[in-house]
Length: 156
Image (cartoon, rainbow, N blue to C red; front, side, top):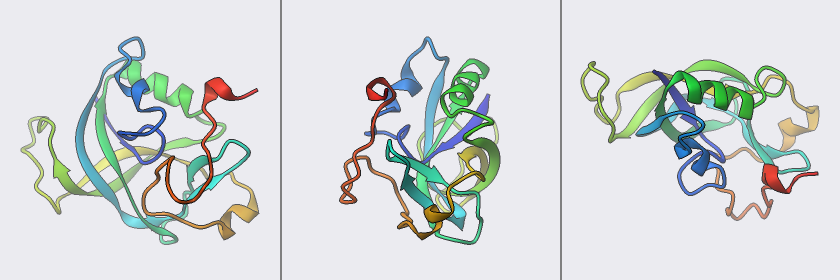
């Protein structure tokens, strides 16, 4: 099982969260809410208004998201869904736990403030103008940014 940190459309209440619980994709279990220990730019960009976490540690904000435990089938689905390696790459990130609600994976239940590691999807390939876009701490498809996320089903 692999720990994955999601910060965009895969979070609870967001347009693609249902994919985390579609058993045909594999198995996923919500473990915790957390945020990155380092700052990263989280921007909404492109013609589909996709949230991108730019792999530029030290810039932007500490990004809030969720940690899930996923099986190999779900990990393969997520890699395909996130277009690894052409659009995103999966890398390890340190996270500060806000609240751990899932199981402890045999290592004890991390308390709030604990530092844990998980993989996340970030991009090193982006348009230069993305660096001048507003950077957020937390993505919400219905946020006050006014940028409507276009689901895969609604794209060309």
